[in-house]
Image 1 (tube, rainbow, N blue to C red):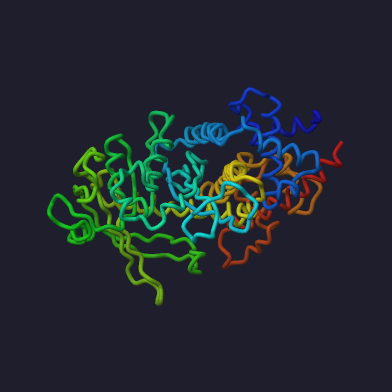
Image 2: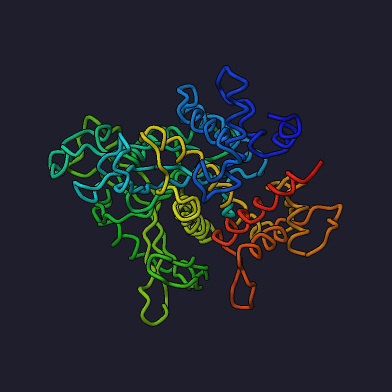
Length: 465
């Protein structure tokens, strides 16, 4: 590696994040940083396609095979960087948003170690559960946890037997496990709130959080019995309306629904829920758990659109409308992890990765997850804090070349553009037209723009003395 390349590497975000990677081999650390730089510059390419030469591709394949470079080591380094960003954000509350996604590798017939993920006996893939650190303003900071597994095909059709097992032996234990992993090492003064969708509506999850003094916010699906001898949903619906709010509902790509505004009516109450009758008593610490429930119902939805109705439960006490609205706004940010999965699958095309073993694919999933979070963070940073300099995401060389490309000039300014300006430049490179009705640029045009920028940067560096 030339001294010029080393100097460029030291100016890259990957150098700062992984320079202290927990392995005792400086050469391997340098290679890992260079691999992160290469893959983040060409996120839709294979390793061979992203590499400058056969030698570089071979070096990256060797790195993926290296037993020292484990997912635990890489995630530990990334978590440290994420926690540092949490401190720098100045926020006293951070959302740890959990969710699971399926990666389908059925067509990869020669890959060993793939397994069942529930689609069918002939389908093979991996299951990925992640915890994403997000500020209350909706800016993604990084991953706090991620683990990958497959299901035992012998367990198919044994749902009744699974109900008799302790939570530690069920797949749903992922929520409790990720809660503990995410909270590890969080500095005092920062409250972590674990956010989940209806899949996280598990009594043991609430019980575990209560026993370990953790906070959560979950959309529930089960109309549980309360200690007040009333069903949960019925109890909150009996409360008078606390007020109304207008929120922006993100675009739903799965159902092809556009972004829209919704007027929501809010109710809330503090209750105690009972442990379900089929919960194994010896594995539950509390026979009832105190929580607040917020009922959110949309008024006058657009014609043909199913109205929003959420039941959100939280460990935190809610005493007024502002506190209830705060929890609703936090839950809306749960959508950020859906966008993270979208970038990972559609942007990085993670399901097209080819390798001989699932173990090596898992390392690449983590690498591209870190890259995806960065793209997600850039997208929403431009919307929430548009005036901050773009230098938090782009190096000097990157933003200067970006500016010259989009403004068709050979002279870059001395002062870095704002993050909003830089993102608009990237979006333009990615095909964003910026018409009146187009709204803010999304992750898709940003990752396309980054690919275009890095193609030009590659030739620029080659021609530079």
